[in-house]
Length: 516
Image (cartoon, rainbow, N blue to C red; front, side, top):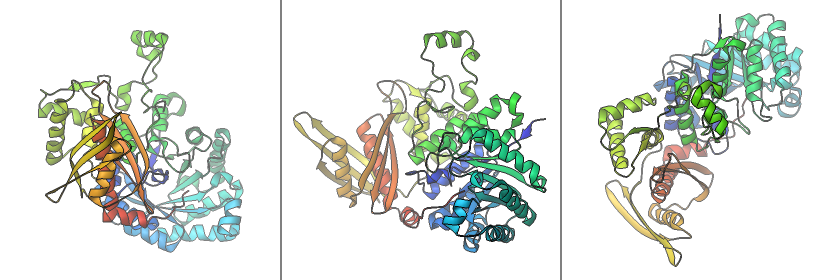
């Protein structure tokens, strides 16, 4: 009988630690809801002690999401554990995840503690956390560089103190699959009470081995994998959720293990995370990359046409990517529109559906063909984000080889229309300068990315921008068939986040979060 592997998603905690990937609390809730639809077992919502914004996000997730266990990270300190417990209070199912470094280099240079002190603090932390939650996970940070005999001693002690899951992090991506698999096997054989806890692994991708190490751990007895959507995370990222899940699904013959993930939700989840974090998925990314199911070679094309499995070990539909791109047009009705959105994994309220349908009709008048990606972009544009202080009402630009680029912008705020014009190095720069004059903010433009979300000459363009003012850095996004309009929408979206008091407090209060 196949073993059931627990999927612990840490996109909202470790994944958010990827440079530039900060999310607002409402955006975290939206992703958490999609993770619940995906069918992950545990959602790590954040590190509550790190900032008021992180604490608020965990609490909102605990209130809004049902199904998965909601987890929060804490160092082995009273204030951390108490902050995690307070944030998790509304959760029906909760887990406190405590960690403490155990490797020689961390003991000597970071903690300046001897083995005996580490052991005592680890046991104390689990015992203290047990006051607030039944499920306690303990992570010996940098476990892959910890002496095996000391690691076994720590694990046995924390399990005896009440830990229900023991997580083995390859914190700096140092391990090699055969070595890491042997480490997990050693734990199953040498830790006397290991039958009372689930062995988990948390692998980083510094050497590109996060997924292979995680799979080696599963093959050697691990029952839980900590991973992130699109593999995002600190430095080079984490083990990719979609790669692990699909490997276990396709290679049941080898691993004899299954997950509870609904794989048809993978593409929708990947795109949502990419859009809200501003981290674009590389085209050749396994499972969810744009080229994952494309065939350029004539030999490959011939083989796939004769029998798909000649060159495809999985079907596009297995991960929620339909073969038919054209789905709707300007004559389509609301029923067909809503059914297609449900098929793409979206569940909208009546008000949200009305707004999305109105945008669909408007887009259908401009485009000859409407693709699935168009529909995704339409819905994502209305996802909860920062407070909408300003709304783009009008944009007009003039530019040319002998013309100074000029932009006229109208913004709506509290029922009033504000208008101004500016010149710039190009039409987009002129738009941004006009918006700055209207809003009174002058942030630094850190990054600007434009990509087509659909095909053809009338494709929608999606613009992602990153702006910074003092210590506050936010991302914004916008979509339109007109790239100037998409650019203006993205910039206004980012400015709204910058001006949102909730977002400002979350970002200003944020500190660099340690992690397993």
